[in-house]
Length: 294
Ligand code: ZEM
Image (cartoon, rainbow, N blue to C red; front, side, top):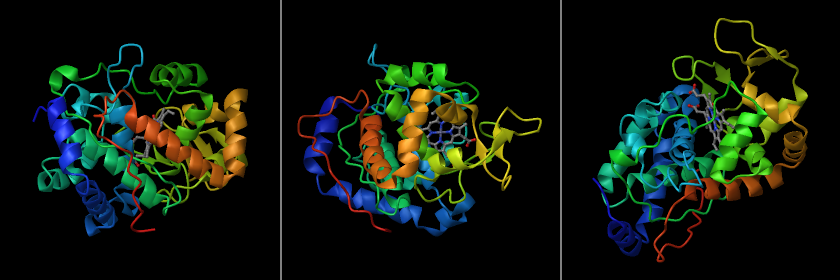
């Protein structure tokens, strides 16, 4: 399963048109009965989280981690607490890998995250994507602790995301992905969705951060916030840090007020996230796919 840089280059050269076909197969998976039967009716959010956790291990100082490698296939990385529950996404994508053995897991997972962002934003977010990542073996697994800890606040967020090379605006932007999906007590320990429509990517996350009154949830679980209005939504301590911190809050205000700008900026930053630390073959060119179920 180990691949060389030559394998990655060959895939890029010989399979130019096939990436479109794999995109379509992922979009079909997202619209499948199995996906509809999954919680909230879509595999999309957990697939986005897989792509993010595969990429967010990047360390710009050492050049280690990032999506190139797909080392989450292996323990210890698959067993890191932050990755609990992501087997669902890896397993859902496995038949597509089997049908297209020439694509690396690293390319498949990032393409799947890209597809989910485009499809779940109903085509509003465009995420250019480049092929040519190369799978690595277990020795390339990243150490535990590179992904953010939701119980912390702004100082921790900056430490983690600056290490990847992101700035304050981009931290706020990327956090907007929490418009999608939910927390699970048997995965992270936290509970509930951030928005009322967890399978549609909009700027609702920023709007709700501002419009709702958030209080500490009274329960035995980890510290999280609950909205006083519907009492059905949640925010993590790291989410609330975005309106506590003045620099972050500035961007929350901008994206809450301007959804078009959110869509445009989010597409770009998600591409950057998917490309952290990837040594693309020179033959690799960005591809912009058309959303299929928009
Ligand atoms: Zn998340 N995220 N994340 N995130 N995330 C969860 C779920 C999802 C943080 C975090 O601790 C958590 C980004 C950033 C950050 C998604 C996408 C992205 C959960 C719940 C937690 C605890 C896991 C569970 O219990 O299943 C923290 C602290 C972050 C720092 C800012 C970024 C960046 C993301 C993508 C760009 C998504 C889509 C989910 C929902 C997964 C699902 O299964 O529904």
